[in-house]
Length: 410
Image 1 (cartoon, helix red, strand yellow):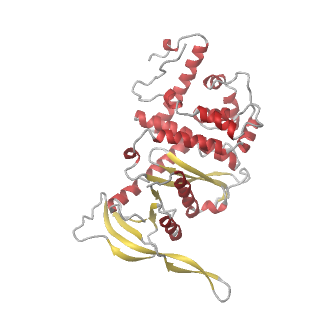
Image 2: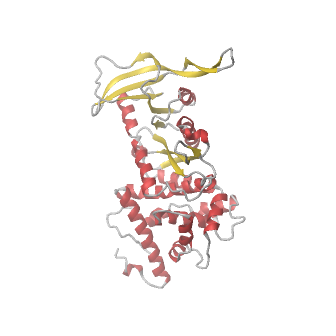
Image 3: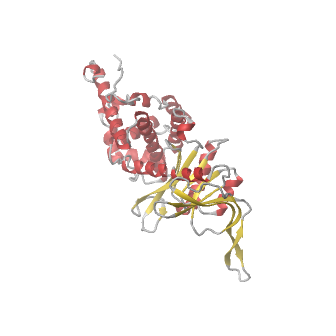
């Protein structure tokens, strides 16, 4: 007997069974062979760890190695992913596997699923200008727990996740644990470059908040044909080369008043050694021109400075693009509140990378489910988990020789 449509929510346009069909089982099996990640594994092979983490993230509000042990040994999990009922694992095995398994295995699965999902929506839906929001979030654990991490002022070690978000899905991610990456002026450019490497011939515009302030980084973006928009500090030193505001121009740009739209040169600090051998900084103008836009909000009279190397878009479009940056803040809140990304299941960089890729895979499944069914984040996560449960129950009913249609009224 086969299961037909297990679809409990009548107004939904896409089901969990359809979404799970986008998980590339052939790729998962092939990677297990080509990467040799299962060479020393007796039970917890790469594909089993993938399904364990996928189901564990969905099924637990606060994931841990202990809950993963219980999940793997649960009959419902085994039925859902066609595993041997007699297989058992311990928490220590999960801990060791996370610390040693190749994160690239999960990265390739994540990228494959993203590529499939990104084809489900058009460029117009994602953004008119291929807008990529880039930002970071910090996850802290008390000192002594993490094997490596950024030291912050609170006396804790921390991990930094820098993520690129296309407005619908997370399209790239990087884990930083080295102290130097505490500075966004180091982390964000690397995150942007990582995404650029994935998209040859791209025409993206990368939107960042005030973390990007280094003129040298902005100059490097221009040299590499990477278009960016960022919010600048209000005291940035510059020389105005040309104003783009005309006498008859409408200065109301939708909730804000345009105060300046100019071609400028920016200063950067150059290290100089004096005669005594001491180092100091001398400010020099960089050759690359940039565009400075200053607007004043009508709501709070606050002035916002924007810097970009784009000279084609209107000032209104630049300001609107920056406003869309807020989408990634909403996404980070979803990761922390609904997918518990703030809690570290593994305490070494290898395991942290694995968990981030798996969390983003689950996030993509939920976000596509949310978008297709036109529901909110919390509702999407709740209904997603309910459908997975119902699918597992239906499989159990079939294995017992019953008809799930008698229970699931579709």
